[in-house]
Length: 265
Image (cartoon, rainbow, N blue to C red):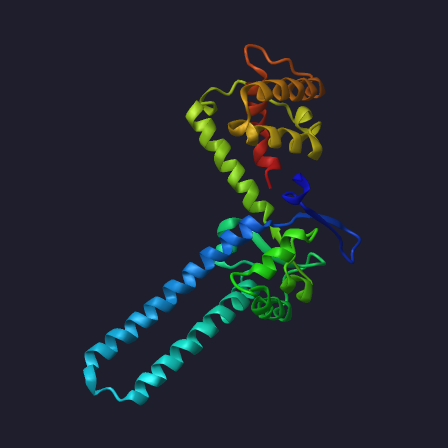
């Protein structure tokens, strides 16, 4: 069942460049939606409170016609907030509402291109259908079984909701920096790399190294030790370095620190 939670979409651009995206699952999308709805609720509550205070000051002298206009205004405001917020935010903020940004999600076209205004309108118009019969049941049901985590709005608009890998990398780096600061690892760097040694490191080597180091805080001790030994031996042989007085984990962390400025882009 693991494939249900780690789905990927591969896209070939018109320039014949193959891109791979990890699609956003139901849980993260639901959390982003809740955050966005809390923002909309706060805005609506603020406007309603302001109008209520004005009506309170005016007292009973307010005609019933004005009360009806106020109610109509609040209904129209709620519709415009729900529709306009998602459309404008996703189009003008690169496929991200505030909720999606906080959860590290982004809406893109199926081609991998940025979201168009028409696609933003279509996918958010279909929220009315995805909401049926209540609480986005139909949209969630469809998304759960779709191989690319698409709701009906995504199908109609030709869009994907993907995990923003830059957000993922930034989160991983923050975790490992916090861990290194706590362990005071940066205070005792003893590893030096020549320019010739740095040139031997390939993109695949960096991905292997960074993936391991950034997962250190969450790895079990035994698994961390076994993986660390294997990766340290591989990179140590390639760089012709034999770490002295340091564990495999320390060697890899120091190597990560030395290489991060030129590779962590």
